[in-house]
Image (cartoon, rainbow, N blue to C red; front, side, top):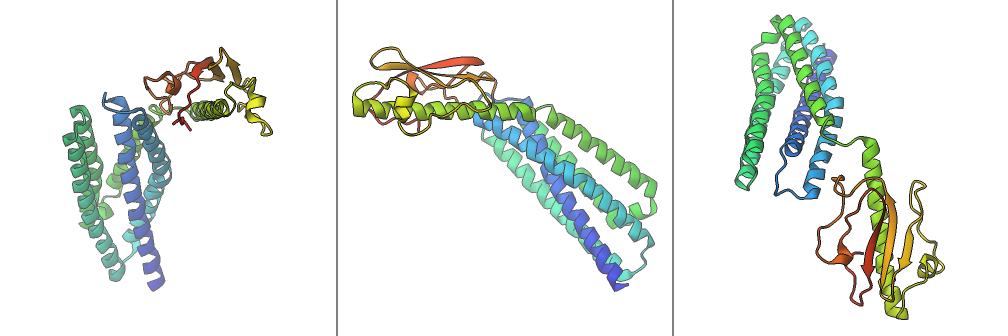
Length: 300
């Protein structure tokens, strides 16, 4: 009997841990989706990509932990209906009340965070939707365990199953919203490759400036620029990087991109005024016009 009590206690604990993780990252997912669906003019490019990252980790965690929570909770409730051991029921009730305490604290903390972001200038639509999401997600869980503490679900198994089905449907809807607001894995990879090519060209620009300071002339080609070191190759069998001197101090650096920089939320392009530091590009072969400088380049 003690062995069963310990086993069921661990299952109840696992159920609650899965619940905490599911709720936390469900809110992370919803907050990220809200940030993208309702863009704020004050957001920077990296903030939008951060929202996409939030959605991705939210999707991954919910997919793993929410079904785990439903499965373990089902096993726990079945065991509680059969188990008559007072010690076991007492321990699980302690955990249930603990979950109510944690749920209440999470609700209050999340509301504080939402209100803080509103006071720091977040648009009202975001504030309302995030507050609503917190109230619904945490409130539903709080209601469930408040009823569970009174033993309601032990005597209403059919209602418990319906509640679980409703929660699963809500999770699926949230996942659908999340998937619809992130780039496909293929596009994410392509964007990373585009960004890597920009990094390579930035490194070439820095090397050309160094070469000019030492030789008072532009290199004839990339082989002359890199000397004994291999010239970087464009990834994924893309056309080779191209360098062309247009006069004594000006040149072009060219690469073939898969996406426009404006399409990419991950783009590292910066809207700087100085020509040498603008890295916006368009799909296909794109050339960046540059002029050598004797100052230390900040692009590296």
